[in-house]
Picture 1 (tube, rainbow, N blue to C red):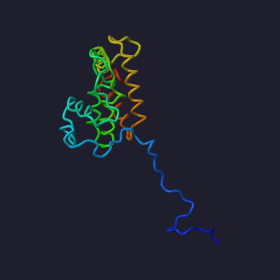
Picture 2: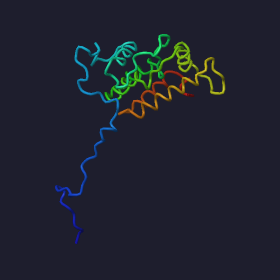
Picture 3: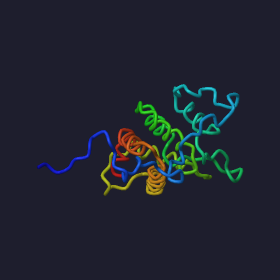
Picture 4: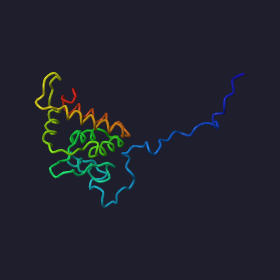
Amino acid sequence: QPAYQQPVDQQPAYQQPAYQQPAYQQSAYQQPANQQPADQQPANQGQQPANSQEFRAASKAQGRSPDAKTETTYDDQQLCHKIPNSTMFKAYQSTSAANQQADIMAHAHSDANIFNSTNNQGHTAAEKSLATDAKPASEPSKVDTSAKVGSISNSLGKLHDKQDSAATTTIMRQMRQDGDGYKGA
C-alpha cells in the first residue's frame, strides 16, 4: 500500500504562516504614504527628472529620504556627494524598476551619500579623474583618487545595507560606464 498522503486542499495544523519581515528590519528607505501635504511636495513629484539638476532638487526635497542631509554645519562648507550626482542621475535613468529608482533617489541626498566639506573642487577633480583616467593602476594619476574611492565605497556599502532592490548594482554598472578610472577602483 502507498504511504499516507495528506489531501492537497488541507494544510497541516503545524504549518507556519508565510514569513513577514519584522518592522524593525524593513528598509529605512521605505516612503510612508502621504508623508507630506500636497502643497509641500516637490513640483516634479511623480515625474521623471529631466536632468541632473532636477534630480538633485528632487532627491534633496523633504520626505525623499528619512535621513536627508540638506544643510552644512559651518558657513564655509558645501554639501558634497560621495557618489557623484551625475552618476546617481544616470543610474536612476538607466532602470525602469520603480523600487530601484526609489532607493537611488532616497540615497542620492541622504546622510550616507552627502558630507560637509570645504574642498568641493578637490572632490570634483577626483570625480573627473575617475571618469577619464584609463591608466593602469601602476601608473600614478594626476589627482589622488584614493579618498574619493573610499567615500564611494562607504556610500555603496550603506546603500547596500538599506536598499530594497538592486540599486547598488545599477549604480556600480553606471560608474563603470562613466569612465575607465572607475574600473580599477
